Length: 55
Image 1 (cartoon, helix red, strand yellow):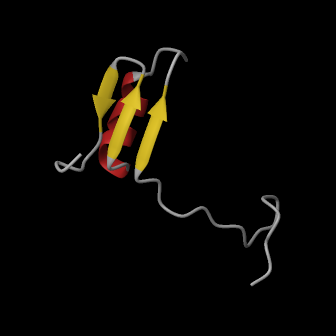
Image 2 (cartoon, helix red, strand yellow):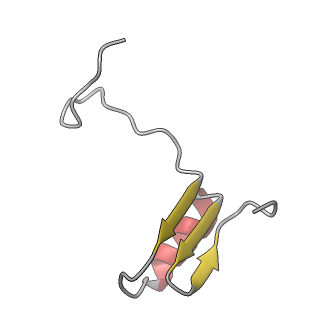
């Protein structure tokens, strides 16, 4: 399987299941909602969220 450049229209990112960000910036409330809806486990500085109860 050939690798696609990220600018290629057929480039696809698979689902993000875990996202951890440290020492960054404040997360907007609408981004928290989006992460809670679409990502299994999120840690963003002091905030934790996500939709996977197993994490």
